[in-house]
Amino acid sequence: MRIVSLAGGIGGARFLRGLLTAAPDSEITVIGNTGDDINLYGLRVCPDLDTVMYTLGGGIDEEQGWGRRFESHVVKEELAAYGVEPQWFGLGDRDFATHIVRTQMLDAGYPLSAVTEALCARWQPGVRLIPMSDDRTETHVVISDERGRRAIHFQEWWVRLRASVPAEQIILVGADDASPAPGVLESIAAADAVILPPSNPVVSIGTILQIKGVREALGGKTVVGVSPIVGGAPVRGMADACLTAIGVETTAQAVLELYGSSLVDGWLVAEEDAGVALDGVDVEARPLIMHDIESAAAIARAALDMAVRLAGRRADPPAPYAGSPAANGSGVPTRTRETPEEGV
Ligand code: GDP
Ligand code: CA
Image (cartoon, rainbow, N blue to C red; front, side, top):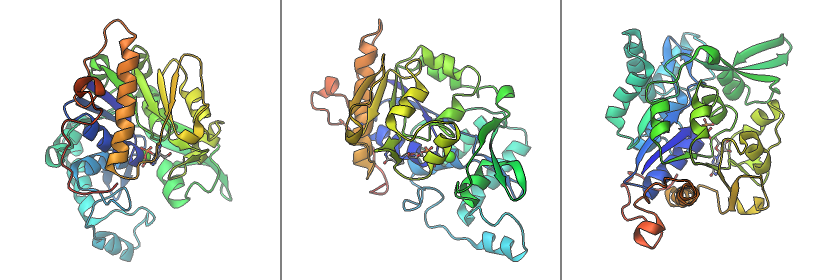
């Protein structure tokens, strides 16, 4: 089975690890958000791509959910000793190496998609990871503070200000001129199912959907989404601040309406959100907290089962994936991918 997933950082990566466990024999393509990307100290940093790559490749700091495990921060301390800004973005020493390699390759003329493929050759994430675009786009946030009304980089709002200043507008700068990276539209066209992980609907999934042709390509596919909002709150992080900025309530219902029935065919909500409904969309309630790899896999399995069922209503249903109840009669995956660490 060919599966395409759109993904941000932590929520996306943890879900994808479950998806790999649930459907080990599937061909999974991940279209990663690059709206969070930023230049720091002359280096190109792609936080969401790296979170997916490190999480699936066994290199993530599990506690934090981003950055490298066994990390040290000597370079950051030395930069601070020189008074170099910004000091609010924490890059560790091991992580720095990734950004150095990326920047060297970009400077040599390789597109980000080729660079990402090269970085993944080391991490072997088990999925094909493609940036949404090779063209530079950046999410900027319009705020008003003592310096007046101005736009700042998403990372400055998110990391330095912890989203404490209300966002008046969230804009993907460069979206109009950005083309999908090679493989983005092709993988969607070839997909048997598209799964939207519980990534941020505004600055992760919403960003990818702004790339030319992506929304249209998804229109012809069976798409199942997992709600990132459980019981009226993001499970972790500050997604509520992003939703408020675009005038959307922080509920599983409002996020479903934001996506709309033209995008999603199926929607998984948490049990406390049972009752969420939208014409033209199948809604199923089940536990949606990713405590560990198994609970993430159970959510992924439910999303895939739903996708297979919904695709079955179309003319050309996909073959069941290896872990599906239809394939082995039990709902238990036939093979579990080895992961270096337990716990998410
Ligand atoms: P980011 O780029 O690191 O912010 O990560 P994503 O955009 O991929 O995902 C962030 C979103 O994941 C948050 O807004 C949360 O709503 C959602 N999230 C995190 N953990 C869980 C979980 O255990 N269950 C569900 N349903 N959503 C989660
Ligand atoms: Ca992100």
